[in-house]
Length: 183
Image (cartoon, rainbow, N blue to C red):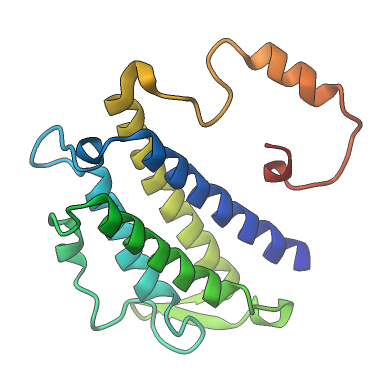
């Protein structure tokens, strides 16, 4: 199971990097662009992800993951207004997450924790959060692609390059490593 803990940390790092790489491709205006009032900007999605992170990962093993002090509905309001605020908030959330998962050991994985009074093993709670963040970071990347348009630099295999990408991968010997080690 130690490979699970190592893998999950790399997965979280990977999704953080997708957000980081998206932010660098966007202007300040694009970070806060909304196609309509019902849609979220990158800034709003970041504010929500971080609100969730701070609630879920603060005192992760000892308190319910939905903290009384969290104001979830306010996470979807326009709070962040500058790139500096967005990036500082983003880093705050990820620091909270990594501070919670880095000390975990195999013996922690089957412990029971609660999110809104619903019991989860630590493994289930981690998987729940990974899926939640991947969902929202996908939204961030999509908004980035939409607003950057022809200036977008692909964060994965660019269109039309699958054959060359696969040839490069298959030219290497079989090995055991996390896929993010070879990006």
